[in-house]
Length: 514
Image (cartoon, rainbow, N blue to C red; front, side):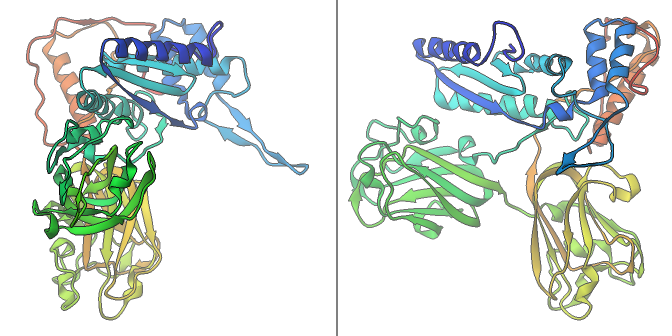
């Protein structure tokens, strides 16, 4: 439901609708969970081709489509500052802001997002979206909501410009603890999972005992950047002196200390930096005292540990003697013997590529430079990440540019969750040698996303025709390959009975696609 730009609707009606749904769920003794979706520069990011296609699907006539195509095309903008007027710049995307039609066109553009909500509820106010649901338990409700957002909502917006709505989501780190299993040394009425339910008024609670502890099993090894602890709203002094540990051992003291909570006010929230410490378990305990440990909320933020590069396949633009491409992922940083590094010949635009064999969300890339002479040879190298092999993969988006790395040093570059199967390093322009002593890649594999593949047929088509079915599978396979998924077998589980109708055949205003 859209409350923006509609007569009789506005912020009050949107608030009342959502609040009423939440109260109704609470009356049924259910928990509620909500996800707020924020889009970056939403009105400026409207794809004109997709918008015309959306209007076509809504039944706009051929003449109307032609009018809107003309209305949106050949627009320019200029900026005036301190009496000076800039030259004209073309506007190839977005709806004209400040116009009467702009808000209506945007509402039509984004309206179908409700189709992805499943049995959840969704409400929009212009480009602000809330997705909410209710369920019998807090953990079930939160898990269901996060899964829906991961598998449905995010892919529809955020698939590298090829999504149903090519708009840009603002991404925020995910609390890995929500997917884990919690436990504690003992339980006095309040169970350990209450520290993960998102409700500030509930809390976990141990008995009064020596060395009380609370633990979350993240199920996989993470590199933990920070832990966020919210104290209970009363009796908060009980947390004073608690220790936060990260590690892979069930024995508390075998794990590494991230931080000590000296004091934390009632109901207060504090963030503790763990600097990428690795571990499957995050433990909070109070050592050496007979106390009660009680936690209102716990958040663990980081990304999956493990160097993804070691399972990949490598190639490079050329090879100097025996300095093969795979030596850059042999887990040997080459500090003792530089022949464990990869090297191209001296050439223009030397490059090295890693195929991760799957599409990953890349958090960090670590590059180790050679330890003897010529450390400056890596200066200016670009790190590219993506799913395309165009120009040998060197046309994918840039994660970072390497200004310099001292001899024998390893430098880390944050890629902010960029998605891709291929990682390239290239030194553009100059005649140089690209030498890499080790490349490490850290991130997480993506949940298989829902994708939307547009197909165009020139006339009435019967899907029972074997040649048509073959063409559909071919186009689906091509779309998956573009996303880095090549080892896929597609087949019809049964003969389809649907018939595709020809609608508004005529000139296409978006190239070959509708």
